[in-house]
Amino acid sequence: MKNSEVETGSPVKANPRQGWKQNPESVKADILRVATKEISDYGLSGSRINVIAAKCKTSKRMIYYYFGDKEGLYRAVLEATYRSIREGEKDLYLDHLPPIEAMESLVEFTFRHHRRHPDFIRIIMIENIHQGEYLKHSDTIKEVNAPAINRVEVIYRRGLEAGYFREGISPLELHWFISALSFFNVSNRASFSLVFGDSLNSEESQELLTTHVKEMILRFILKPEHTCKYIGVRLTA
Amino acid sequence: MKNSEVETGSPVKANPRQGWKQNPESVKADILRVATKEISDYGLSGSRINVIAAKCKTSKRMIYYYFGDKEGLYRAVLEATYRSIREGEKDLYLDHLPPIEAMESLVEFTFRHHRRHPDFIRIIMIENIHQGEYLKHSDTIKEVNAPAINRVEVIYRRGLEAGYFREGISPLELHWFISALSFFNVSNRASFSLVFGDSLNSEESQELLTTHVKEMILRFILKPEHTCKYIGVRLTA
DNA sequence: CATCAAATTAACCATTTGGTTCATTAACCC
DNA sequence: GGGTTAATGAACCAAATGGTTAATTTGATG
Image (cartoon, rainbow over all chains, first blue to last red; front, top):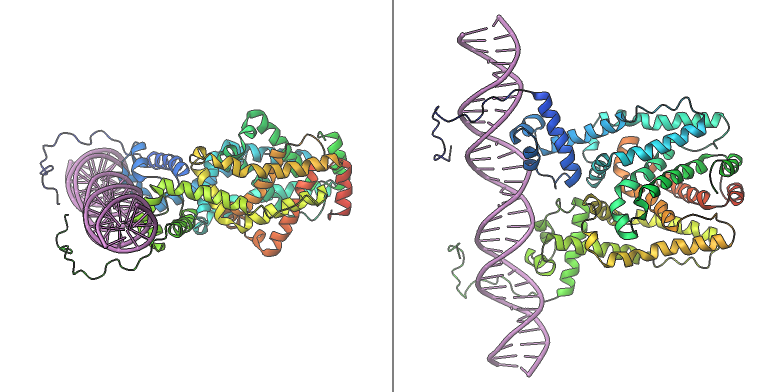
């Protein structure tokens, strides 16, 4: 007790904290929501605990109460972000489509999905700046993401069996390609626009780009004979 | 003068700063070099002026003397980084190669060039986290980067004229594709490895990936008839 | 060689930042 | 309904951080 000038501990003090309700879950969720936004906007060291606290309906103390420290909060944000993004992919059912259409749909969905979730992208960017230091210590991350490769693999297998796709392509690599194009489109939008003009960012250009990304992936995996056919029939040459 | 216990201003004081030489250019360059490394490692807000100063042979004051403030230092780093990366591309002469080979070489070079310069990649990532705020205020950036599109365009035109490439592809978009794959390979290495395993990072896998990236771009731009030929003759199906 | 601007240093400072202490209230349980 | 624990708020703190002051030295110039 160093500041003796403030409040001499009298029970007469006004009503500093009356009428608040306990609600741990909603408080936690609120912190996580605000923290996700702040960290995704300003980075781990750029974001401020004070700001996060101020934007929550709760006090700063609660952040430490629930998440230990800033790093703990960041880890929670990271995991929640991954979980939520993969959660959003569960809506996607492609089993009823023939392989080529299924692969097209997957690419298109992934591309749009990334565009729809810039916060996710930014969190991943930030974690990559940190060289994956925090991802290293997450056990759940791998299992959360496993379905992503699986989805590609299933479609690829079907395409192989149907004789459309060429052999020897790694599903992991295929996923890498799809991710790369989808991710870069969001992650590097600012710099690319500023350096080369923002003509690729108009709604129409993005639609066209979506088509071209699909086209690029399909041309890559289709067998020569089907590529020729595909090009002639389904795409504009 | 608040600390009166230190040095009473006597001329007898030891030799606090003797034997230093003026060398503005080298000091500036040194600061820039260290700052580039630090900022690329820890970000704009993650990097510490004190640390940068400590790692320089000069004092912290000089950073402010030459660069004004942290933001000024960052801007200098950003511009120097862009300049240096584009400088490194000047070695690349492709005019003597036929269009297909030229395009392959360009893709391969770009892919490897990105791999060779992770610091550049990280600075761009960081600037994108900041939504290009600082890039906006740079006049030189556009002109520094203009040749990148031009190189693609020249080769594309030659391929068009020679009848190899299909029409209607935007050189800008083509550059975007090449950049996306080259950039993502470095920028997202950490997260991708941790989430999906690091099998794509072995030296052999990276070589294979280089080939596949070339293949993907070429399949995308070649005319149907040449695609079929190309696939059969020059690539493994 | 006196002068003066540019270059450089060491010490200093105000503010911000992540993190804590302590007291108080809400809710649960015999 | 008394006691116990979880939840919460306000004030507080030490350390770190970006930035500054003021003095000192170098080197060029007339």
